[in-house]
Image (cartoon, rainbow, N blue to C red; front, side):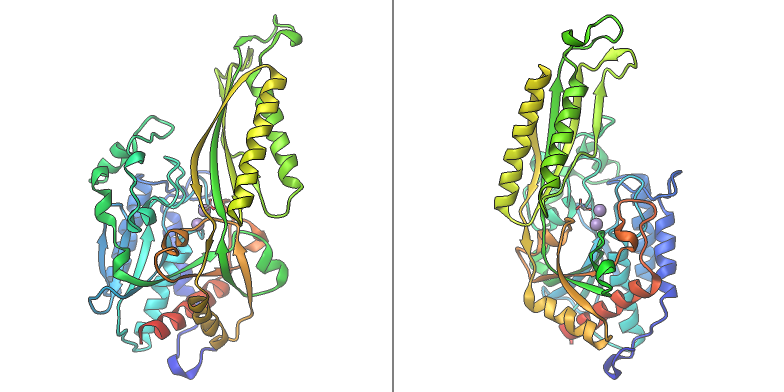
Length: 412
Ligand code: HGY
Ligand code: MN
Ligand code: MN
């Protein structure tokens, strides 16, 4: 039960209804949710979000980068921002990102219904393209808000050859005007609630996670080039098979990472060309995703990955090339702001655990510039980036109430 200071409603149903309504936008045939950047599904989601925020009496606007903001309270450049992303991975779940936006909105609703008036504004945010799925541009919206120069991304193309510039133009946005999305000067603090996306809280039997830091991300794209040839007439000893060499590399990467605690390595996309059942693959392209909690570990991982690719290519007698697509440094979060979340959790009598985030988040773009803290709620079975992703209504609402306590402390 919440403390007498601010009696917050505890009914989890309205928030769960929002999660289900938003999760249905972009629902795909596999039972998941697909809302990639600049897609019609994401446009529909932001329209739903804008209408929902407007019904709560918030002032809604979208910036040049497609970020959506809903503001409650007075003007000023000391707003407290709370939010996450509305885009998803392909065939993703209904909670990754979306819950962070909706829990922020629920926190505002709870405070308004309790008769609270903030002395400085609370801004609920839905960041554009946190996942980077379509153009390999993770955290594009929050990077634009943080004032990063993103001009190099304009020519990025998706799997259908559509450029980022054209995709943005389909939303009435000009990629050259991304710098106008710089807005971090207008906020004094940033909070993000997110599902943990791993098994730690559930296995520890703890209700909430207080995030100490966010893992660094390294994205690589590898191309193995052999010789397309006849599957039946080419003796095994005469082949330059790009796929079998890549497969050897991929298994070597898994073996390398399996021997280490917290440097997960993932190959998520593999393209085989020309892609005939009776043609020895002449080319194989694949992505490599590396996470680590320190720059040194990221550097060591990149070296090991490059060495494993070179060995496998040499073994298969094929050429190879490796290109870095992105690298985000590990980011520590703000201890004082995290203590505000901890006090909110204490008001709810919730158990908490301090933990590092293996997943990347928009918070990592804000943390170097303004005090930033993250609150995790458990993921059932530690599962995420999967249609079966789930967190109980009670756990979601507990997180929203803790956000509400923190927002009240920060804006009273
Ligand atoms: O990849 C990540 O860590 C996040 O889900 N974008
Ligand atoms: Mn995600
Ligand atoms: Mn996410």
